Structures are given as structure tokens and as C-alpha cells.
Image (cartoon, rainbow over all chains, first blue to last red; front, side, top):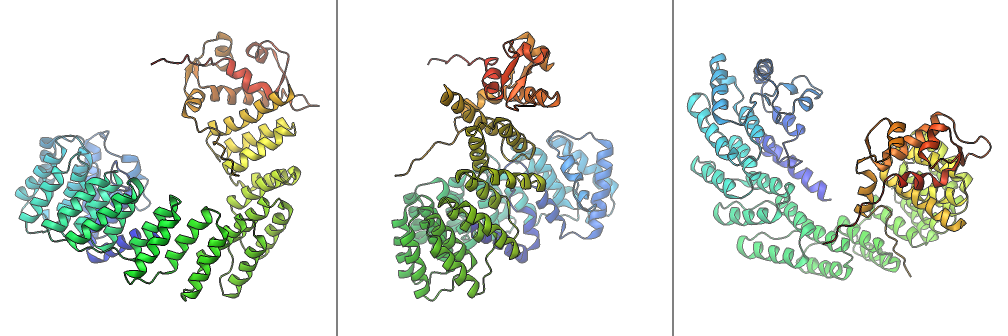
Length: 491
Length: 102
């Protein structure tokens, strides 16, 4: 759900202003991702691309690639036009060199209005990284560009580029400076700016700084975060801070800036408390949000169901389901899958089968996840052969089994003393190149060693390494532990 | 009652003793691998690979390895080795690091 919200947020941002997509925060903390660069092309005209391509070629002829410049990733992009961004104009982060390169570029292109200044700025920021002077240099470079080129005045996205770059700096002073610059240039920060800053800081694991700056935005610039930014921030905060801190922050934002949590926020909170197995708090939150006049939706109930399933509270699972029904909320595929998973995990296969029927009747065809959950339950019950039969049913119904399905089956067969069948299944997996999951691998090796089929265990080890199912060392540790056990047992 | 078993390989110290690249102390092993540095894991994989490529497993009982002269030199001079004891024998070449006292 969280992913959904962030995706929809970025989509929304894209619609709002195409340029802001250019400065979406990097997915990794190091350097802005390729997708971002390719996105950044979209607003440009084809002429601009052409020019960018030309200066790219020119610069790569002239200079060796600097160590900061990620040339291979640029060339591996699928569209030839995408490679044309001049990411490698600058080989050093030195300001004077950059100014010289820029002047040279200007002199080569008389029609300076067709240059893509923001890309140039972006590439200079990339080269600079987070060296101490990088931010000051970037600001100075922007000033240099705007002075020396008549056709360029910094627009909102130029400042956003600077802002993302400033968020890479160790303290927030740089970000404040850029915000100051923006206000002076009559681009007062918008919700897009807040979003950019929050996402940059959170991906760099600086959630506390992000919280600070959101408060500042709300207080000084009169641009409180929109609900997507807000929920993203709360989600990040939930991961690293205690519940009390999160509640305190929500309260603070509500009283100071009037930002109220919405149904999505509550879903995030409930998900977070369920992960910490604090189901009482989840129930409390449910009543709180009802008191606030929110109508719990399907996603919310799915989250709670998931929490109960993780705790193996199968009576509560049914209670939640009945409550959901009585509220008149139509369960979706995820609800049913969670239900089947939870019930099968509690070894209530009959009930799970009943839900399989109910879900088909209500128009949700069971998928791989449903069947795998059922198989998991059967294997836990020690009924691995039944699970094997289910595999056939599943394939008849047009569901493609995945590696999780096979691993569950292999594990169940090994534990249920049907080693030969397990080995047959493994042979099939080897043929199809399906990876083994760690638990399945460990069980298989342990069972093989216990039966003193050591050569076969080595074979499984080989397959695990060849198919890269799990890290080599982990595969070895499992094998070694089993063998050690055998030696101990023999003596 | 629920038993929570700790995942095998969760201990970072044990893992690092496996994958850290070490100088090989014994000259015979160095000759065998043709390298001077290797991790314990890498050594195991290459010895097992050697057994497979040279078909040294006993055809009657695959769990037993009939060592050739080269292999004998690194596995304590045994002419026959159980596959089960292979990891232990390899580990002998990589002595545990003495514990650092604080």
C-alpha cells in the first residue's frame, strides 16, 4: 500500500508539473538513478536532445571519463536518445574548470536558447557529490550560467536540482540556503519542493532531518506537505522510531500546521504496530480512526488480518473477517489470500478450503499465492502427498507454480518422509531452472545427510550455487552443519 | 510451546571466517590450488570441483572419494576420504584466529 501511495504521488507530481519529475529524489543515496535521467528527458524537445547528444560526443572525445562519471550505465540505456544527456561534460568537480567548459559550450553553440541548462547543472551536481565545497560550487555555477547566457534564467526545476543536491550535504544549512534563494527568486517553495526534500532525506536515512524541515516548511513557507509526502514521512518514521515519537510528531504537526492524519496514515500506523506484534494497539487505532469519522476500507482490514495471521491467532482472524463483512466491506483477492494463508498456517485446512470455494463463488479466481498457502498448510499438517495433488489441480486451473510453491512442496515432502518424491520435484526444478529457497535447501540437505545420501546432498549444494539460490557461504554452512551432525550421531 | 531456532549462518563472525580471504599457510595446498590466497569456502568449492572433474568418487559408493596423489597431499595423506568429512578436513587448513582479548 505504501508503495502504491508513493507511486501515485510521483504520478501526481508528474501531472502537476512535468519538470518536477526531473528532480525526483534519487532512489539510491549515492547518485541520481538512470530512470530519473531518462525521465528528465521527457519534457525536452527533440532538438534539445540532438544538441545534448552533440555535446556529449564532443566531451567524450575530449576528456577521459572521470571517476565520478558513470559512463557504462549511461551507454546501456535502451534508447539512443536517452544516452544523449551530457552527464559527462565535467570531469572534475572543480568550479573554475566547469565554468571554462560551460563558456566553451556557449561559444560552440550560437543559438544558446537550445541548450539544456538544467541538465548541465544536474551533471555538475552529480560530479560534485557530497564534497564539502560541492554545494557552494553548485550555487556559484548556477549564478555563472545565468549571468553568462542571455537566454537562461533559473526556473523552478533548476532550484529543485540544487535542492536535491543540498539534501546530500551533511547538515541542513545548505538546504535552508537554497530555500532562501528560491524565495528571493520569487519561486516560493511548493508542495513539490517539500516532497523532493523529504524523499531525498529519507532515502539517505535522515528521517529526523526530514521531520525538522517539514515543520519549517509548514511554518515559514506556508506550504505544508500534501498527504502523499506526509504519509511517506510517517512510514519512514515508523520504521526507525518508537511509536510514542511517531504519535508525538503527528500530534505536533496537527496542532502547529493543521495537517491531519488520514485513512492512509492510519493504515501505515496499523501496519507498523502489527509488524511489532502489538495487536492491542492495532485494535485501539481502529477505534480511534472510527471515532474520527473515517470509514475503514478493505486495505485497512487486510493489514489487520495480516497482523493476526503472523501471530497465528486464527479465532481473531475469523472475527476480523466477520467484522469486515458486517461493516459491508467487500473482501478482495488479498483478503482471501490472507485468510487462506492464516487459516492454513493454523492447520485449519477445511476452513481454508471453504474459503477457496467462497472466493471462487464471489468471482476471485484463486492464484498462485492462494494455492501455495494451502500447500503450506497441508505440509504443516504432514499431508505432503495431498499438497502434491493440489499442484496438479493448480496447474489444471491455469496457475503457474513459482519458486515459493516448489520450495514449500520440497520442504513438505522432505519433512513428511517422502524424500524420493522431493528429489523428483527437485529434478524438475533443476530442469526448469527454478531457484530453491533457503529453508527448502536446508531441509533437503539435512534430510539427505540423515539418510546418508551425501553425494546427493553435494549435488543439491552444487545446484544451489549454480542457480544462485542463496549465498554460497550460507549453502556451505547448511551442508557443513548437517555433516557435523552426522559425524556426531555416528560416533 | 514454540521453539525458536537461530538461523544457521546468522553469526557474522562464523561467516567471516568462511569468506575472508586468507594467506594459505601450507605449501602443498598452495601448489594444489595454484594460488597463494583463498577463502575457506573457495578452497572447499575448488577441491570439490577437482573431485568432480577427475571422477574421483568411488563408483560403487558415491559417498567415498578415492584420492589421487595430488588430493592425498592436502587431505592428511588419506587414500580414501568420506565426502562427509571433507568440510572438516578443509577447515584444518584454515586455523581459527586467536581471540582478541580486550
